[in-house]
Image (cartoon, rainbow, N blue to C red; front, side, top):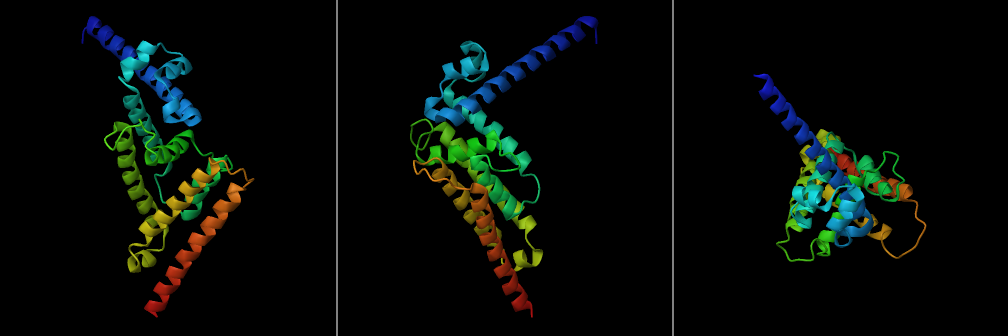
Length: 227
């Protein structure tokens, strides 16, 4: 490779690095704004101001607000997958999902997790774009929700006794549904107008003990059938 070619390659690499950094700045600014103001309250102009980048740069990376939010959801989904990369017991899952909502989670509930939880409510209330079923952002979130459910089932399966899963193969999916219902419900409550001083860590522990009790019950049933 000639010196000129190497210089050109280095210039392209530097330009790409700057572009990637700008894109990340925009996504992180959008993440903070979305958590504070929701989908409807987040504007491209506000993202520009918060990121410190000109509005033209924001639109260069993302042609529309919908495109920006699809990319933001993908960013959050990637972060979520990294967090949930190994076997995950019910107690840790509920601690992150319930105690994390109030900042009480000792494992530091991430902004990305919080955004995905908020997006669940936005999708159900049709706030994602204020459009119909074909809204690009809502459709992207619902696809991710399906994939996240599959991952949750796999992780919970890996955390349960193998003999229990063998005897009750649908148990991991049922436990996933229950844990999601609990965490989604606590998210709604935490953001409602019912001003009660709740110890979310305590409720996370109570929910975990309830579901662990179910697992113990299924384990006794499996052991009883073997004997």
